[in-house]
Length: 111
Ligand SMILES: [Zn+2]
Image 1 (spheres, rainbow, N blue to C red):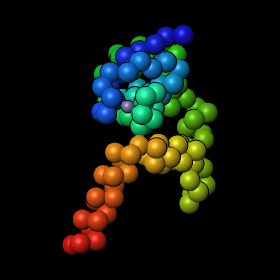
Image 2: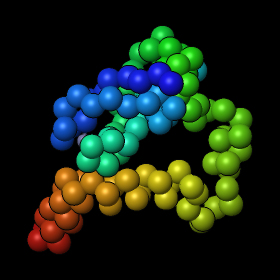
Image 3: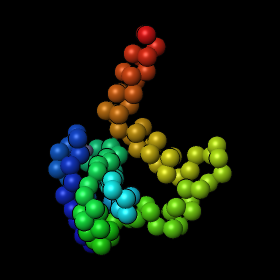
Image 4: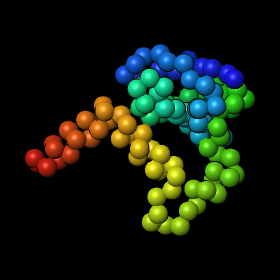
C-alpha cells in the first residue's frame, strides 16, 4: 500500500495511506485532496496541482469524481448525503475546528 506524507495544520507532517485520501475535481482547474489526520483526527482539505492529483489517484487514492460517487451526491434535496455527514463529523472530531466555529458563533451573537 502506498503511503504519502501530508501536512496537518495541528500535527505537521503525518504519513497517510493513499487509500485513505480522497481526490476531487481532478478534471477541473482546481483539484483538491482531503484526508483525516491519523494523529488528531482532523479532516484536512488542500488544493493541489492536476498532475499531483492524477499521481495520487494512480497510487490508490479514492476518486470523488467517479461516476458512483457523483450519482451518490445527486441525493434527493433536503437530505444530508454521506459526504456531508462525513465532513460534519470530521469537523466535530477536530477540537480546533469546533473551537473556531464556537468563536465565530459567539462573535456573531455579540454583533
Ligand atoms: Zn493532525
